[in-house]
Amino acid sequence: MTDTKEIVESPKSAVGQPRENEPVLQPPVDISEDVNGITLLADMPGVSRDRLNIQVDKDTLLIEGEAKIDMPEGMKPLYADIRSTRYRRSFALSSELQTDSIDATLKDGVLCLRILKRPESRPRKIEVRTV
Amino acid sequence: MFGSLTNLEGSLFDEFRRMEQRMDELFGRDTWLPGIRSVARGTFPPINVGATPEKVDVYLFSPGVDPKSLDVSIQQSLLTISGERKAPEQENAKSYRKERFYGEFRRVITLPDDIDPERVEARYTDGVLHIAVQRREESKPKQIEIK
Image (cartoon, rainbow over all chains, first blue to last red; front, side):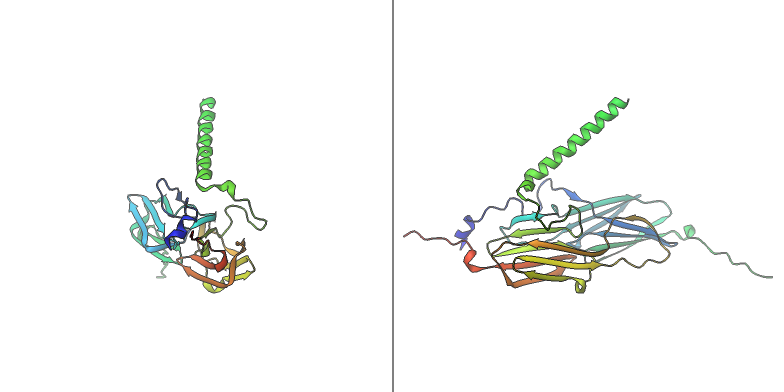
């Protein structure tokens, strides 16, 4: 049945196949801070754990991922909001953060990073003793 | 000084315009007329729709959504997907960036007329909802043999 393929229009840019010079998507993020550290949430739909890369180089945090979308061969795009499968975003970290122990979890395409502050940067409560 | 600034800005915008044109060439945006039920660009969740002679594939990029909150229904060739993404509970946390969408969402997609609403499959993996809708046999291209 390979003959039928010729009738089908050739796939110009299947909905998210990696191509050369493919644009990079900036995942939207939520960043918040509590007394102990910083929490970062990033939307990276289609990215599985093995296609995710989180790197800290000096003060730069880099988040990278590649979405794997299951697409049949010869698919013709009818509509596409998402035109790339690569995500990348970086942030500058600050010195009071413990960059050597960042906790990362990935669930249903949402990356959650937890960056703790150095113990000396956390607010300490000073107890007042009565003599 | 200001002259050079505006020049710089001008060239930057030109660059963006060129990029946009290039994107349009690549993806043929002009060939897609916005549907009467379409939403503004950037609305959550983004969708992609692709077709093969056998089926139509719809991808909904909706990370962090409880699959139980997703509602997928099909009426003739109209596919409706709705759901909700709940905000995480964060006590005593101060927010810096809030770029992610929270709340209820709904997207309606007009599928080709030859789809079979009885044969629909939906799967949620890594935050992507993939809906595969089979097309009717008679509409598949057939090779006609020349005798």
